[in-house]
Image (cartoon, rainbow, N blue to C red):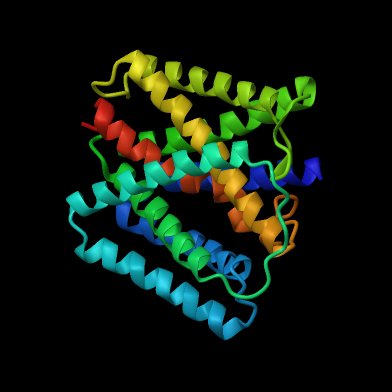
Length: 274
């Protein structure tokens, strides 16, 4: 219900803002890791793992991947991972918007979803952590990424409710409309203007910054669609029930999973973080 979503958001947002702005990078990385690992447990269920021991093994494997990336992966490897994820999310977004065949429930374990899910979770985590550590304004930029996603989501919700007629991807997520996409894009432009005029956009020009925010918003919608596809194939409405009115952790971070690597990589390209 809407009131449950609002109350949950009001309770969580101050903690998210405080954690991003006040915590050091290592502690924030640990907290984000816990959140992403809760998402990994839900990903395991969506991938067909229905017994607790196998779910725990999957979560432990994702945690091990995070530790290996944190300790051993050089910056060049992380850049390659982000480039791969940028390509992945752009392709997934296009394919899911164009999808026109009925989704059916998939029984049994899905190793490919386990693998892709692990890479997506780790990639989003390391991207967010590195953005937070970037330059002087790293925490502000990470907070901006969250605000961008929240603003786009709100713009999509209200524009879709007011003007939504034509469905974006009716067989994946019937509630999403092209009017909602327009609302999300309008919110992205407002956010880009706010960051640029604040002076926290580094060396980035206004036009590249606006384009980056539009692309990030587009792939964030793709992240939402991808999770919706997994839920339909798993035969569930929500990824979990941890957050009242919101469903599971993945239901709240699906957009961030796509947006984090795309924004972090794009920000480095256009000079926001350098």
